[in-house]
Length: 151
Image (cartoon, rainbow, N blue to C red; front, side, top):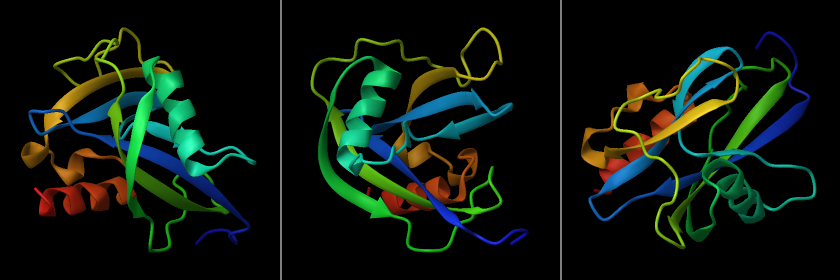
């Protein structure tokens, strides 16, 4: 650790599988870097984890999801990649779309016009073909391994 940890950052993510055993992945350009991750985001103070995930779904997809069950919460120390003074806690829930998907799903990664902060695209990836090393964050890598163990 380069600096003493003095705060937590909590992030909540959706694990959404379709009928073809494909998982929804988000490709984003944030904080001046490319990242492949699960859809979701940061929890606000005064917000519960499920409410956070439902809010993030509307913000990212433009449509609602149903949260089905808890899948995993970080069970090891992880310093955040972007803030030296913060510990990251990530919570993952299995979820599904309430209505048919209405937003664009790409067939290639990072399918956006410009690499500018906030750019985002989505794609389905066969779960048995998803490589943990494709994910940018260590906790996501662990979750991919856990998911693949349960295929």
